[in-house]
Image (cartoon, rainbow, N blue to C red; front, side, top):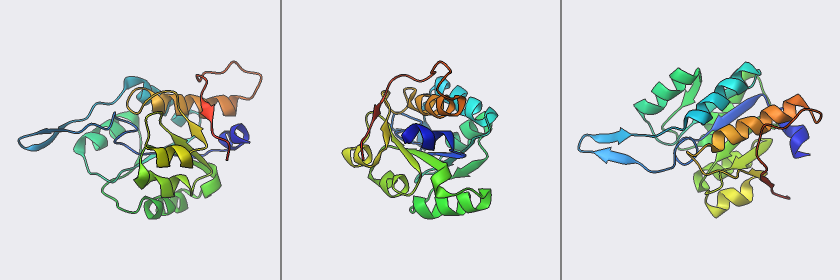
Length: 177
């Protein structure tokens, strides 16, 4: 069922800290100074976009580096500084005219669980909090900030390509629910 669901995904929503990055925050004397993004994640996002799957970012924190990285990747749907990720998601999916069942998300912590329970296909990164791991349909083999987003993108692309094509994604654990 998970692969069939994956083939129908039209929107992928990503968290930032702990998913697109390794979750560590670097602060200098003037505030947040640095976030590190994995280049393979960016390539996966671009390939997903080319395949017709829209990508959005919903984050509880605000960061100019996130806006810069998303612009560089062509991610047009960026919502930052939100406390209620489900409400932000509902606005986004309504604007894009997609159902919750046509959406996937990637999370890593308890703040992501309500959104993970709302979408059609929920992913957790390998090093996620146990609550996010339990809410996930699929758990990546890679950690947040270490190529996990690319792994999710490849999973979705594999599902769209069909069973007769050679898979792009590494093996991962699907969670029975």
